[in-house]
Image: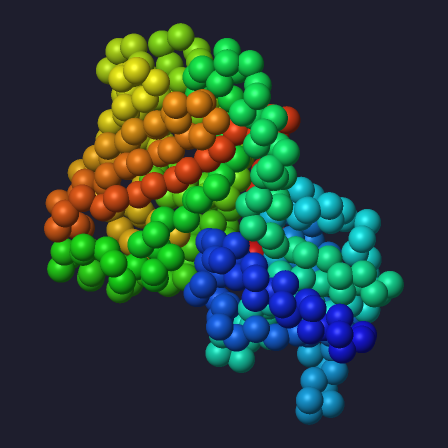
Length: 337
């Protein structure tokens, strides 16, 4: 591999660090330790939640090493133009990204140099993933007003990470009981690694499209990640509650959907083990912009057991015509089942 290619690949890796911190990557990989590993592909696992390669190389001690290389979901890399037929057992490649912690021979990759010298990004910011270009935004702005009048469309994320989670949880106003529970969290036991779908509010902070469907007395919110589905009742008291998602009851205030969610059978606020109790209540607002092209979700997590004050959360989406909610179909490798 040419040195210039490796250097460019490292630059891609550094630019995409913010896009890789999802699920348990922060616990297993060190985003501050970027490197490159070159070797031969011995296995390819092309499934969600992460594509995985096994790579064989000769280490500095002259012994053969097996490296586990993970990167974005199938949905992510397909949107970036990476198909399964680009990777084959026996190919010699160079991958760059975040190295495994504590000397583990593993990497969360953000770029790859293929045998023919092509450099391919495996992670990218949301504008590249979802074609959020000036032309696409102009198309949305000029669309018929009736298409922009409500939320019942597919929306792609612009900002999606829980800010407090990105800070490693240090900003949460935890009670003494909350701190004690959080201290027990083991990133290796993240339910996502077992294809266990998260619940509210964890499920909202994700880097994939969502959509809304009007079913009269209820609104169905589909989330691409984990093939998730929320039911928000706008007629009645919202019975029954959904496992992990809770019981959501909403009302319209103009173009804003105001929702209260409680009875949540999910014990985490985020994907780094910050706890929430069965008493948690989430107050939500889905706010449509005046021109109908942007949608914000602003929420407060109220849990007196674990937090001394309400915890704010926020997600912002935009409308790019033609985007879709794709199937997720999470499946574990045999060695993780």
